[in-house]
Image 1 (cartoon, rainbow, N blue to C red):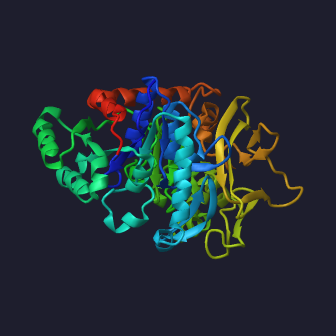
Image 2 (cartoon, one colour):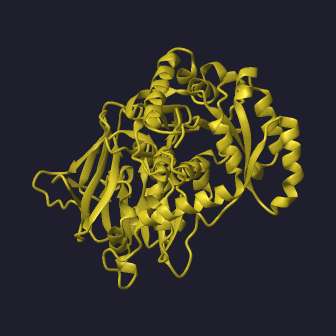
Image 3 (cartoon, helix red, strand yellow):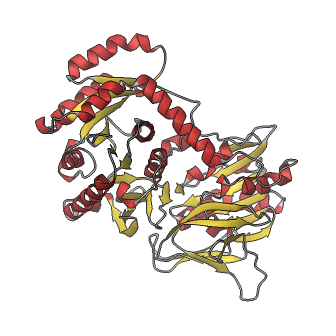
Length: 498
C-alpha cells in the first residue's frame, strides 16, 4: 500500500467523539490494507492500561490500537495526566510516573520544551513503524491562551506534517459557530492544515442537514467529509467520566443487582463494561447508602486517591453501608484501590497521594496496605479461585498489600502464571484483587453471580475478545457509510506538503 499522510482528529471542544472516531478509522485503515497506529501526545484520564512491556498509557489509545490490530505501546500516548484532585495530577511520561503537578506548574513555560521533545520523539519512532499515524487532539484547538504551551494539538500536527480533520459535535448545538470559530482562530499556517470537517453525533433525518453541510462549507472554506449519526447499538469502551455520569444509578427488579460504589476518584471504570452487558445483571453506579442496600453484589472499584476516597466513604456513611451489606450475606468485591480499602488499614507514610496519612479500612479482609512510590504496571495471566480456566487482566497500582499477621490463615484469590499470588479470598461473597479486567473473564463472572443464578458453570458466557472485535467492525461500517472515503483517501494521498 502507498504511504499516507499522518492525520489528526482535532476537536471544537471536549467530548466531541474524537477517540471513538479514531478507533473507527484505525479499523477502517486496517481493513483497507494499511498498518495504522494511534497517537495522542498528551491525554488526561483516570482510565489507563498496561502495555505488554509493563508501562502505562491512556485506555483510549489501547482501544484504538486494539481496533488497529496491533499491540499498544507508550509511544502511542507518551504523556498521561491522571488527576489526583481538582488541582493536581500525576504525570506519567513514557509509561512511568515522574511526579505530581498542579495545573499551573504543568502549563507554565518551564519544562514544556522537554515534554515537547519527548512527544515528538515518540511520534517519530511510531511513524517509522506504521502507516498512517492516526493522531488525536485534546479538547479544543482554539484555546489561544495556551497556544505557546500546547504540545498535543496544532503544534504537534505541524511537527508531524499532518492533515487535520476538525470534529464538531452537532448534538451539543452551536455547531456552525464552533466549527467556524475553531478555524478562524488559527494562525494562517495552521488554518491551511485543516483539510476537512467531520460533523459527529447527528440525530434525525440526515437529509434535513444537506443545506447545513453546504452552508458550513461556504462559511468555513473547508469541505465537510461526513455527517456521522449518533449510535446506541455499538459498544466501544469509553474513557471519559462524562460517560460515567450517564450510567444507571438505581437498582431494578428481576435481575442480579450489581452496584459499583461511585467514588470521587473512581478509575478504570471500563472494568465493568463486560459485566454491564451480561443479561443476568443490572449494573448501576451509586454513592447512596439506600441504593447500596438494594444490591446483591457490591463492587468497590479502583481509585486514583485511595485514602481520600476511603475518608469520604467514612464521612458519607457508605463505608458502614458496605460493611453491613457484607455482614448480611451480600457479596462484596474490591478491585485495586477498592481491594486496599477492604483491608484493615491503608497507610501512605511518604505522602505519595498527598499529605502522609494512615486510615483504618473497612476490615472485611485480613490485609493491610502501604502506598509506595514504585508503580506496578503489567499485564498478567492467572487462574481464579475455584476455576481452572486461564484468565487475563492487568495491574496498575502504587501500594503493597500483605496479610495482617504472620501465620494467620490467608487465602489468595488468584494464582498468577509466574507462580506468585494476588488478592485475598475470605469466602465466596467476600474477596479483593489488584487485577483490572478480572470481570472480563467468563469464569470469574460465573463464580461471582453463582449465588444469585442457576446453572453458572465456569466459562459458559461469550468470549469478550470476539465480542469487541465485532464491535470494532460494526463501528467501522457505521463510519464508512457516512464518511466520504474517496475524498478522505485523496487528501491523505496528496503530494501537497504543508
